[in-house]
Image 1 (spheres, one colour):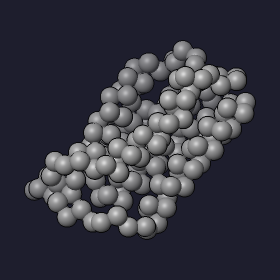
Image 2: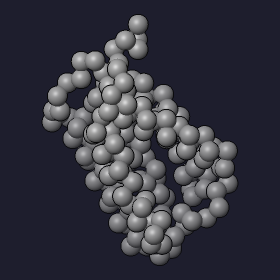
Image 3: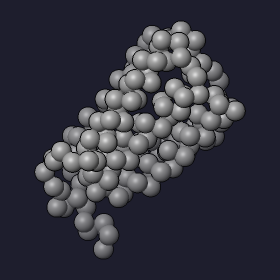
Image 4: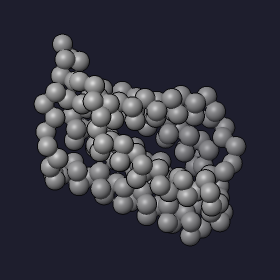
Length: 150
């Protein structure tokens, strides 16, 4: 049925997107930013745990579930949307490291990576990844709003 459209494989592009999105996080782990509000203790620990589990499941789904009829890479509006989301995500990190720890930057750090993964999943027609991605996105938004906006 539904799962017959997919095979276990390895999508290097899914892993590459994940690593690109994680680059600023690796820098942040090693080098604290000025006005580093992201290092506060979270008030949404249960949501964060659920989000982390779904993030791992999302990455696994993006990397190992491949459609039987996987199209060749193409440069279409969805691919451009992934690139634009990554660009804005990096821009938000640059703003954050320049001391702008405001709601716009925090929401950019929250929303743009989720959108990049969503556009990538749609681009690759990976419906399996949409479920954990959706839960991760909701948890990531709750984390951002409750810890930094409200």
